[in-house]
Image 1 (cartoon, rainbow, N blue to C red):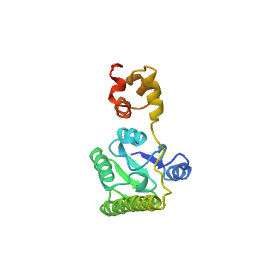
Image 2: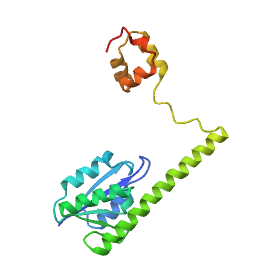
Image 3: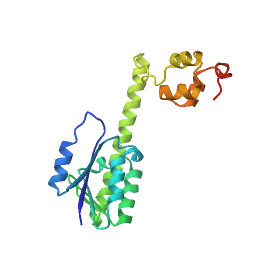
Image 4: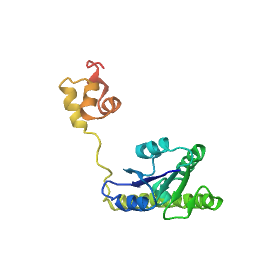
Length: 188
């Protein structure tokens, strides 16, 4: 039975050091860390590598369950996969140990609260954006495409596929950004 740690922070400006130290103190010799949002399970490659590596009898250790998942569905999916592999889950700062009935119950309760907290944060953010819009302060996010750059390249005869590749956008975005006649002769 081996202990494997997983540490996660949401932004690149946050520090993983405190979590990693706590995981080492808990006995983890192998620790996977990443700086990714916890709301999208599919984008967390280090977690997936770790889950794929774990074997029956191993234990996945996190400092808190919100480092593992931010939604109840993701948490349940992870716990279900771990259980299917015969892997336990423990948290160093919370009384969670899925090898016990009490630990499982506490995990479920904390998962509900973690999802509730995420939903509250989203609601507050939406309310803040709406208030800023009402004051005329909010202008939206930074534009992800430059329509002028697309028009310029199209006028130079660059094909839509090459424009998309050069600007790092999809070909569909190129087509949506231009009148259809602009590419009539350009081909694909």
